[in-house]
Image 1 (cartoon, rainbow over the protein chains, first blue to last red):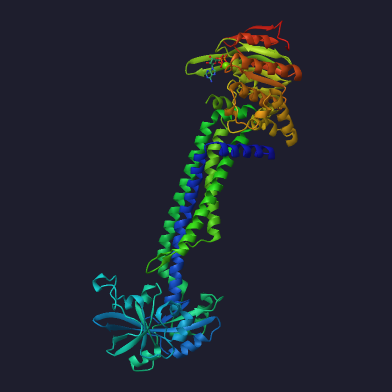
Image 2: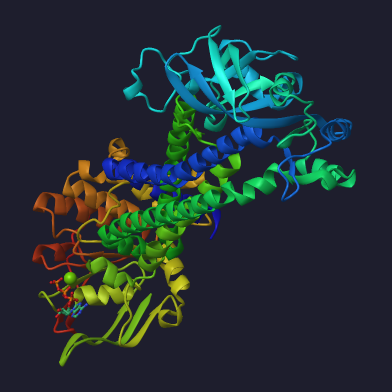
Length: 406
Length: 233
Ligand SMILES: Nc1ncnc2c1ncn2[C@@H]1O[C@H](COP(=O)(O)OP(=O)(O)OP(=O)(O)O)[C@@H](O)[C@H]1O
Ligand SMILES: [Mg+2]
């Protein structure tokens, strides 16, 4: 195939698309565009959901590395020494101990079971962004006693009647109100609500926070233990690096050390696996639809122009030129369809970044990398090329006589 | 020169055998304007297809300019058609999505020995010759039948082929348009010394032919020089 042949093939292809049926050309491009969108939409939404769950887990549950009690034990003991050790290591932003205790909240006529988490506000602020999620009042200060911050779902809304509530609440607590808290050990005390927050991560939103100083009053003793310790890595340090470091310095003696990824592969990993299956199905379906549609479009085109193909061959046009004519048509349709698909996808991504689908556990936006766009484009393009070249090859080999008689 | 020796084409359909060509021997000289005439079904088109390398004979030999075309590969045949032959079809057979200019230049664009400049020039001058220069950007469907057939002739002529085949080029045209087209053939034959082989079954066309071969049932029944071909008016 020389340059002249390719040029003629391209001219024939271009003219056929320009001057042939406009509507069938546009519809074909639209279908390819939609297939591309379909192919990339679900996977990138799932990956967006995955990202959002992962981020929330990091922010509100386990941070980058989680130190939990040795199996069989309820607490990490010798806490102060352990914290000093962890905080002294390179790559560690901050370690924050978590200690929680069940309690019953009383406000006016309402009763509600809530898990109260004790934190050191200074440490916790470096590990978790709850302090940025205050909807009323302010975050806990270091050493606060008699003050509590609660999630919005617990505070509730005074304008909603109890029987209409989505989940039980205290029915409209406001900042400055006093809430009576009876802890599991029988200790009862009135707290002033210092702030109300809403993170969107329901386990945190359905909890309340007090300072560790306050919890020591509740326990009646110094609190040298924690349910677990969340460790935030400094930017640029890998979770694995910190985990190895912690283990090397003997934190493993006192507790279990797991990275976020370790934990993820145990829980969310299962979910992500089923996402992967759905993604594969949506990819295969899109590829098949695109292939079939283009195959049909090109087959119809070639069948409709069999006589013309015979004539072209009769006047000395090589069969390769004829094959590439249809091949180029598919390539042009494929490229335009993919461009349309990319535009639709980016528009959807832009829309969803402004209006994400928000649920209590996750918010879905489209997580798209340029690589996703490239890979999907290449896959669809190859499918298109195959779908077009098969009928093009077949028709270009036909005997002139048979073709011309058509 | 075209030398045809004992050419046969047999179509078999089940038990029925159609001898479309039943032993045709014929020599066509360079520069001849040959008319092939005869009743419908006598094998005129079949003969032309064999000569134009569009179909294979069952047996017999065709030698064009000392080349036995039965030995050609598929690609060589294509190149032979591109470089040596021109073909005009009864139903014009223009590419509907290409303009007049694009249709005419198409065969020239594929020639390795033609620059883009030359292709343009050649296409332009042939369009001038057929008088359709002002219609060069029109699509075939915007032209009359006679005009389309002239474009088809221009496409066949743009590479200045040695031999021009035409299978009933006037069958779809009225007398007036037929004359215009036939005059063009005659002019081309006279000015460029192209060999022209034309199939026709209109008796009055014979005034244009130098030599007339009559066929019936796949055989040549008469072959004679036309004593009084029409001269340029
Ligand atoms: N592909 C084919 N299969 C079977 N028979 C064929 C085929 N092509 C031509 N024939 C037969 O061969 C014979 C000669 O056909 P051909 O087309 O050469 O006739 P023709 O002289 O051109 O007739 P017309 O003037 O009608 O065009 C006819 O009997 C025709 O039916
Ligand atoms: Mg015929």
